[in-house]
Figure (cartoon, rainbow, N blue to C red):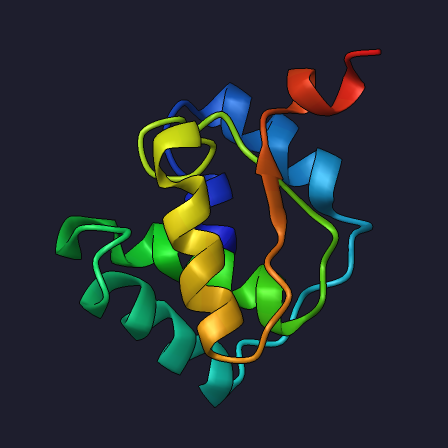
Length: 107
């Protein structure tokens, strides 16, 4: 998933890579891949959002508390939240809280 951070505008990419260089990398286990497929197959996310589904699944299977994103189309989307959480719970996982950085920082 580092490829996404390295993409786009080179200056912005370098800033992103610098910001995350000390963060631990999360494991992409088979269970994450299976959950990502379920998030698409069971309907919360469209087939075009497979990478977004994998982001959610990696966070969930690694027991991350928050998934911060500015992707409000498929990730930080209140209309999809309950359906994403339902799939995670149906597969025996506690869902991750998906929100924008601004939402997390608001008092």
